Image: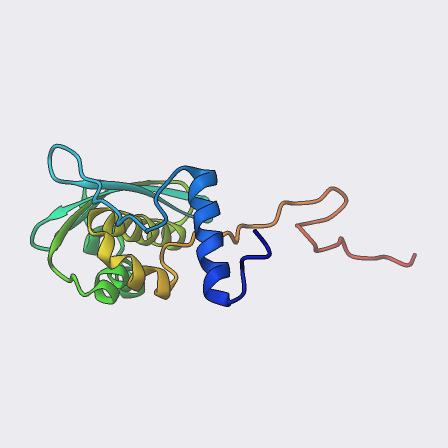
Length: 166
């Protein structure tokens, strides 16, 4: 077999034949299918720091409800509201989806980040063509930064107690 391959095209053809034979699947990429429930919604979980958000999106007028309250009431700071709107602006779907989210744990900043992550994942499940824009913006990647644990013999994670010479 190595004697037959003389060009790069021959090598590429041999590799694709072997991969298809080994895996038993077609070598062409199959397009992603939308994931929706019986009510036409897509569901995803988002995480940030200690906050976990469960997010459902469905076509609508752009209404966002978090823990039973409107977004403006739950996230009073404009910065947090902007964080929630980012996936829609990047994907160009402002005011096209209604969002229902439940969030637990963490503070408001972490919760806003968790809802943003959940909305991004739900959007790409609802319409797989939006995945490229959301992935390029980094919204589908979970931000793994969390608070460092407290160590024994320390006041906090790294802060030491005050040193006394005498």
